[in-house]
Image 1 (cartoon, one colour):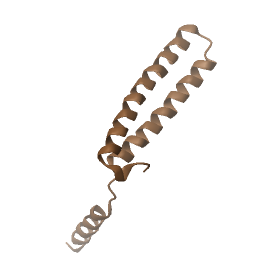
Image 2: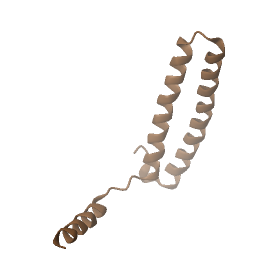
Image 3: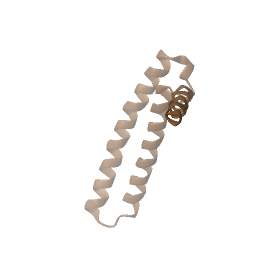
Image 4: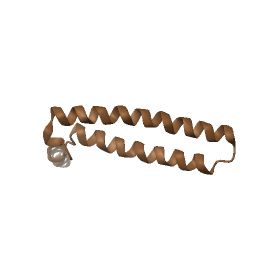
Length: 88
């Protein structure tokens, strides 16, 4: 029984210490990840010899760019609504 009580106390302490990441920071990290994926797709497209595969990679890189533009708009909205996250 004593081990369970210690475990419960440790879990409670851990839950209190978990740092919540602001939404703006999560959006920025996601945007950075998407930029990395886009760069990888563009690199693959550059080295691809098969024209159909090259077009597919380029088209998906372009689609990803469109998603990133939407993310950047969302980030601007978040930073306007929550100025403390600007530049975070």
